[in-house]
Length: 214
Ligand SMILES: [Zn+2]
Image (cartoon, rainbow, N blue to C red):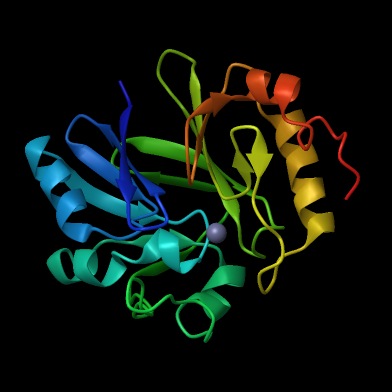
């Protein structure tokens, strides 16, 4: 059975998620606190096989350098639109807590799907918070689904669009796409704060209900 565990990292409370099947693990959004991520992997006897990023913001990828020093072969899966600025743009750091990370040599440009270590995901391009934002949708063996939404969709809220590359219009379209694509029972695991479900969001989140005029 595919399992997951959240680790809240850094001063901005970013959710890093470990997702694993048997002993092979994905690391989704290693925000910072690399030592804690490594310790959790070791405690659970997990071997990391991939890092996936929902988007390129500094608070989601701040542990990359340390993780890639320890495991230089780990593929880093993110969308090309965010690769273009994430490792170089002046705004994408927050000294002294988050500094620019090196552009990984193991970058994998995300397509529509990704499989590694016996885990498969659909990668849903959901621009708006950033141009290369993506939601990572994993269907488990029992038919239940997990969707890692990054900063696109939060419990009762949505990500900001006032940072470079953000777009109200695109985020609105992405939310409509999620509402149409994801089953109501889907568990929503966002980049910050608490988990939710699509059913709960459709009932309580005015942005996902399409009630907010962008
Ligand atoms: Zn963000």
